[in-house]
Image (cartoon, rainbow, N blue to C red):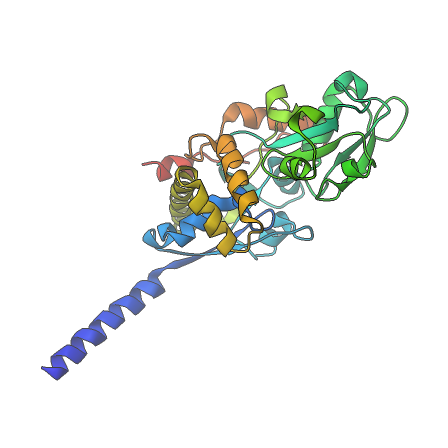
Length: 323
């Protein structure tokens, strides 16, 4: 009887070990630090959605000195979260990034100015100092200025561009007339700093039709030619979007999971989760071709990319994932 029990336990342990070995490793590189901007991925891992798909997913946080395009090009990730401007610019330079899913349907980028300041409308931008982040985040801003016919070299016929830190200090310290914020992050930092919504003039990129694709999922073109890797990306996207749906339906719990993974300030994460949900909409990860074409055109017009990219996105992954 003891021998039979030992054999049963050994068999169970063997099956468990086999199951663990069968899990395929996938490394995800985030665009920024751990926060509710990426809640769907943390939730998918925490709730076992990746595990259910036979995946062992490692989530790497980003930061000011981490460029996702460089990480994946160097083999440090299988899939990255990136904005289309940075991804398409990298693709033209030889990094074969392909958009495999687009969780964010809208952009969260805004330009905000104090109501008591000199900027009331786009017509007031000329001659003013406007803050924007760089490292690939500047492309929507430069495309917008190009659309308005404003130079960005600091001359009298254009605007002076302040290379903005990843906070709201340039506005508080009056170093800029307007600064860039995300609807889910820095905007609320201004509110927490004492500004009221009625104190701010807000230029929302999505509302103005100036939004470019943000927070898409990208993998390398050569790796997608491998059927096994492609199948894992289908599983990854399926589980990730399940994670996003759960996060949207359970925002407080999702914020708590983000906190367990390195997020800061639980109230801020809860508020961020609510704003992020507005940008994702229906959590299916499907790319909006009209938004892609507008993004591509804006980048071409600004000469951020010099030729129309071919094969820069695929719908196959999300189509398979939705079955």
